[in-house]
Length: 322
Image (cartoon, rainbow, N blue to C red; front, side, top):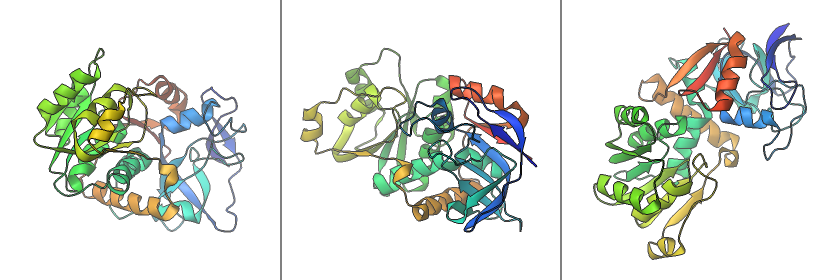
């Protein structure tokens, strides 16, 4: 028998239950799970309101995790739990996963940190490089720099050759943390901000042309950042934490010949995802990449799930299964 987090009702928190140990099918492997993040995607899928449709219940949530194969190899793995019916996820002491969804990790990677980074860091890396065309010497604005994607993006932009990063975040603590992680300056996002006022603050913070904006928030911050991009500059959107819509003017886009690019991890092939994870894991193993996270015992999942659902977490919650 194994222990698993079982979700029986959409919108409720999962509870720990015992289940029969899974047996790998052809083309799959068993993973002894060590750590699993609770991500916004997990909670969204389990709510039954995502664009994937309501999941069939009961099921084990968790779209990613880290653990070890039978031979001791440390791995990251992904699942489609909550997005595809009949699929159990990562929140169990042992899981079976298609081999194609398993990525071997380099020696020395702290597994709980890699769990916290996971697909959020993949999104930051790929949005900057693959979608955004990050080039050595670019000056980059990272909106939403207090979140897991934003924290990773500040560091990954500099690791990818950016000469300077401007971070934008609501709280003073998040701005201070962004500067600790390498941002040259951190700009506040104020509750009553309009596009013009925020654009002025970004211009004041810039040191020369702004080449690239990483945008996990949309809304007013995205519209303001577009106004300060150099001609031909790029904005990559990968979320809508601030607003689902943005007051963007056609003249701003046309006059600067700007490019707005949408990004989602769902657009990656398994090989592309594995390559990005390998980069992220390498930086984490070398101590070059981190994000704020807290480690919570598996038995405390109900409280941790509720805090993630309420948006009251400080960084990523990682469940420790061992």
